[in-house]
Length: 507
Image 1 (tube, rainbow, N blue to C red):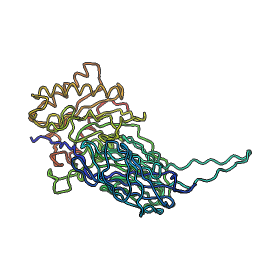
Image 2 (image 1 turned 45 degrees about the vertical axis):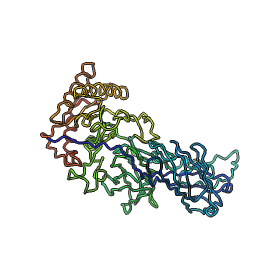
Image 3 (image 1 turned 90 degrees about the vertical axis):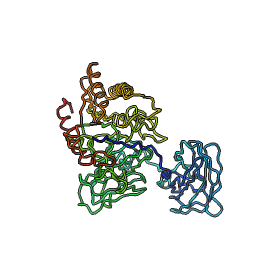
Image 4 (image 1 turned 45 degrees about the horizontal axis):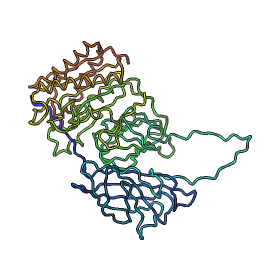
């Protein structure tokens, strides 16, 4: 049997685009009580050892300006060498650009473009996040003119009406690891989904993502696949004038690029309704490319001619997502292709899966430890880590000379990782360790079995292992690079669901 392969994909795109925006009352050139706002799109257009080029599109969303000053901060020591279409000064990481003589007038809705060349440290080139126009942080929306204060007679009580929810996380339910950024939500982990409700004949979905693919589902049916949609409001129209559900799902992996969901917009005459209640059942899936859905939509193992791995990946039909859906459970897919418990695919890289498990935005420069809001309490955790540790032969120079040494480190690290899970979720959560056939080596299978035995001997009775038998299940491995296909994911989901139904879970 051929070995399962998981590609170790740790390469940063040199043409990543990040968009930031800003809103607030502009100081200086904007008159008092003026409507104000701006949007900035920043793109690294080229990059080479020691240097890079970038472009900035600045759009004034507020009242007309006769001059402007754009500021931002570099967080990793980048230094601008030359700038076009403005005058630049830089003090440490703080950059100030003032308009040129010919582009100071910036009408409402008008844009101007800047470009520059800069040096960097060859290890990190994060996108600035604090763009400001004329001294005020921006968010891509406009502020209304400030109304003068009103005097209410002492005997009069003004009516109070709660404004409709406008933030993405106010309008929708999600259990995914997301980071609130203003009224939007950012995320990187695969399979993140947002669920909302609306009344009317249509709904708009606000997105800012040039890296990932999405599914849009209305009333349980997929109505669109969005391929790297960029900054857009995607509309679903011509629906029956009634109450509907909407679900947005991130299909793809993006450890170095955050997607951004800006919320829902009701069609004319409609309304965004209260978000649906979360499901009582929760499952956390932890793993690698199998869990992430690497190339699972392909019908050929060589994906070079049919769109590549990303276009052929769909986290919404992975075995984890299908299992959760069959059990009516909310779920997280905490998965990263190519990473292992102690060793990555073919010995690549130095950071393994455990380095990133607790993060909100994976490997992004502004990633932090994910803060569980207190609502994520999975009754079941399914862990599938080890394929990348054992599926390739050890290379000269790795810190293990033999598979036995690797297996010993793997077991030690896995036991410590399970201690962390127990600390996070308590003694009642069931933990299932899964593993496939990796013939001819038996190191993965024997290690997982020993880990479960060790935990049980220490009094942990709510832990099990599940072996995915290729032959018994009839897996074809027709996904990209010998990964599970969509059919295989259905078979794996069936095996896992049947196994879960045998557990004495207290949902």
